[in-house]
Image (cartoon, rainbow, N blue to C red; front, side):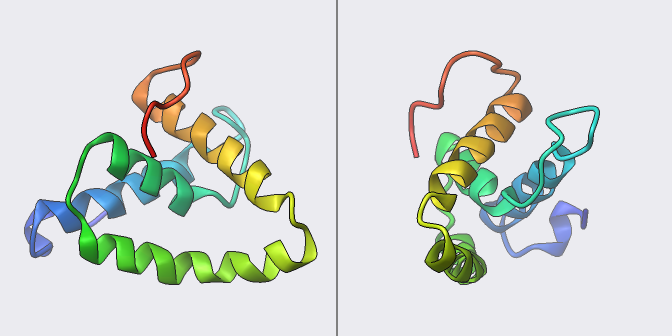
Length: 102
């Protein structure tokens, strides 16, 4: 993970950090899942109330790749959102309560 000083602002740093934390939850000793780091990051950005317009635009571009999977399986987004929420809750140390904001 690059250091904060390598970013123009903390609003650009934290979405990247949250994305990488999302990846970290995929380890078999954590949540043992893959593929939802960007959705996890978007949830955590919202939870942290960051004004990350540039990060949002980057997320939208990144999530465009999900569109191909969604065309093949319309339930994929529900699956991915559930996995991403579990990852966000794990990162926040919240094992039971759902996130209150998106």
